[in-house]
Image 1 (cartoon, rainbow, N blue to C red):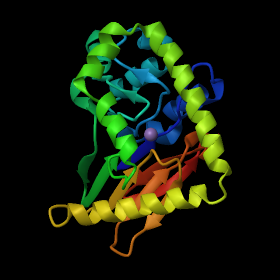
Image 2: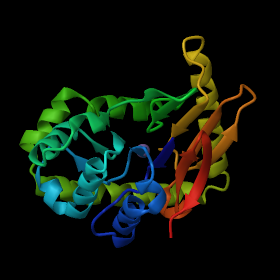
Image 3: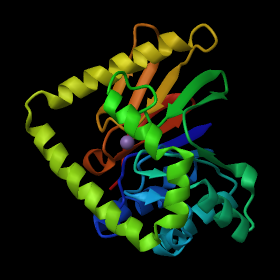
Image 4: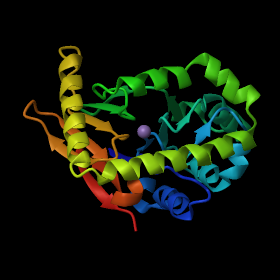
Length: 257
Ligand SMILES: [Mn+2]
């Protein structure tokens, strides 16, 4: 059993490097050999609402997705905090191309998957994060049905594109300020490890996870807990230039050149 996982590319069409990276992932030999292909959130920056224009705008991505599904791959697309409310867009895409809907899963939160003898938990990662209450309030608002309606019906596709470039410009500025603080990365890394440990303990005794696999923190991680589970994170893909590949329950980071 082979699994390929990618997250946090933050693709913008105006940023060629980001879109190239996504397309390279989707044509990479190890990905094409995989049984499960998992997009673990924040693949796009920003993609919100059921606008059909996205299919044309990112036609190379949707064409590659179609080929994966036609090759009988199981594909999971997780919502991130930069790409969400896309369920109706993907349903439309699957129907239009007469693709097997049972192969494609659109996931809003986290999911448990039992693969062979092992228990996996996959999520974008913001669901397990400890603290960060202002973010949680923000998320509950943007995930609400009201915003879904607003994003789909009230705001046009071009409005969303303009909003997207403004939001990412702002967050870039915020982040560059944060990254300058000397131990910012270390603090975030430790926090997400604590978050994974706490999530593992909360899940007991119903679930005893072997692997907790997330994105979101932008901190690359291959952490083995004393509790016996692994917490994996591919980090910010354009920086790490890797994806996660798991073969027979043995994970590794693969360079994507
Ligand atoms: Mn995120």
